[in-house]
Image (cartoon, rainbow, N blue to C red; front, side):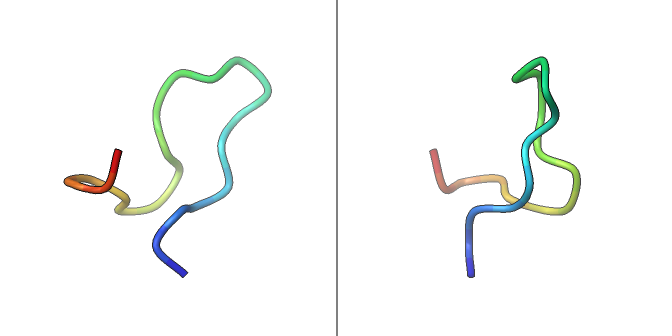
Length: 21
């Protein structure tokens, strides 16, 4: 799983999901 759980605001990934979007 590369995509982590995003907050209800859509700011930044909770865990480390950089260099993926």
